[in-house]
Every structure is written in C-alpha cells, then in structure tokens.
Amino acid sequence: MSESDGWRVLRRYAGRHAGYFTTRQALRTGCAGLVQAGICDGSVLRAGVGLLRLAEFPSGPLDEYAMWAAWFDGAAVVSHQSAADLHGLGRLRPRFLHLSVGAGRPPLTARLVVLRRRLRDIEAESAGPFLVTTPLRTVLDLAESEIGQTSLDEVIGDALAIGRCTVDELRAIEVLTPRAADRVARSIAGF
Picture 1 (cartoon, rainbow, N blue to C red):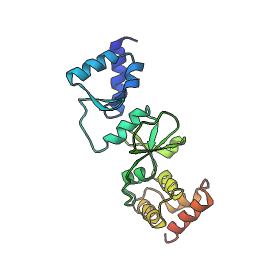
Picture 2: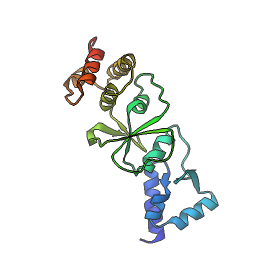
Picture 3: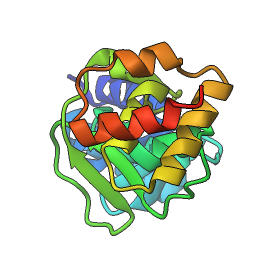
C-alpha cells in the first residue's frame, strides 16, 4: 500500500471516531511520515500518549468516548454508569469512564474502568463515533454491579418512563445472577 493509500485508509478510520486515531494505526497503514508532517503543519494534533486527532474535526462533548473507541480499534463499548449517563438514566454522575472490551491493551490512565468481556451485537448500539450498551444491557449491568438499590430503582424507573425498555423485557431476562434478578424485581414491583 502506498503512503497516500495508507493516508486515505487512516483518514477514513479517523472519520469514524471523530477524527481520532492512534500511532499504532498510523504505523499499520504505512503513513507515519505523513502523520509526522501533519503534526508539524498543524493538521494533526496530539491528543495524548499514542493518540492523535485530525485538526479539521471540531471538538465536541463526547470526544473522550470517541478517543477511547479509537484506542481500542472501535471494539470498546461504553457501559455501566457511563452508558446510563449517556442514555439519561438516573443521576449516577460517574467519576470514571466505563468501557467493556474483548481485547486490546488498556491505556495507562486512571480515568478508565476497563471491563474485559465480549458483548453480543444486540447488546450494543451506535452512538456515532463510538458504541454504547443498549439501555436494557445497561440496566442489567448496573443490577449486577454494586450501585445502591435506590440508584438502580431510579435508573430502571427512567428507562421505563422514557420507553427505553419495558417491564416485560426486564422480567424476561434469564441471564442475571439471583442477586441481580432480585434487585430488578424490586425495582419493577411498582410498575
């Protein structure tokens, strides 16, 4: 692949992640020289260790999610409290960004909580430059986590109120641990 072909591939990849790409991807596409020239002329910006961004992409409120999606080659899914926050479920105000990933080397940052697991395609949905767990998967993840019952009640109540999942869907779930199933049952008892 020529350097110009590699540059087109890298730009296409970066375009899927709000302009973000990694030095690893630049090396893989064979266009490290063009990236270095871009850094010099300002068309490529350093976004962190091993992370770069095409300067033509405007900053946005979800850039951090897109950046980490690029880090994991698009295979990361925003999950747990972070997914609830994105879906507008509850008021958890997560201090960390929660990602579910099947593989890949996590970056050295205290900002991320990386959970090693593979999700089925139906458990994630596109949020533009990154993936996020579906509202139903988010509720189930939180039921299996250590958040308080009151917070879980609020998340489930919001999900039901805005039509992101139904009581029947929550009752039909068979993959929960007994503790999580009990927590969900308590939350939907009033519906």
